[in-house]
Image 1 (cartoon, rainbow, N blue to C red):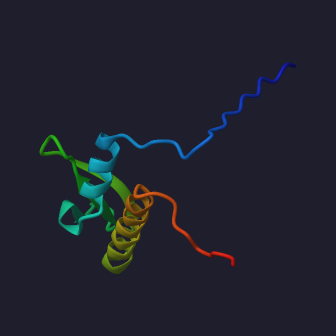
Image 2: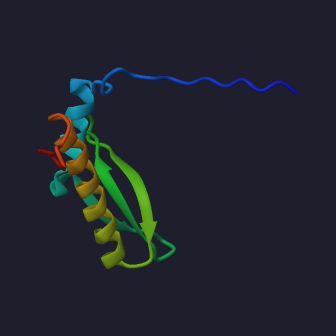
Amino acid sequence: MTYFYTTKTWASQPQVSEETIKAWKHLAEKKNWRIVQLPNGYYQTEYKDIVEDVWHDVTRRETIESAEAAIDGSIGHYNKKLEFTKGPKVVKTFK
């Protein structure tokens, strides 16, 4: 059996497209999210599409509180991604 391996290296941070940044900004706003209750009693988190008036499902949770916590976690995740588009963050300097 033959295995094929491939690796990629960058001399600098990979560049993020403007379209991706726009999507992250959209997902970082709570007004673009909602929670719906499914017939089985679970709660589903969904986000609104940027272009169309369509909702995309993301996660399913047992309670409304855990569904909202999942949305808050996603918003935090996208805010971190947006922060790093500004460049590397200095965490320590030496003298």
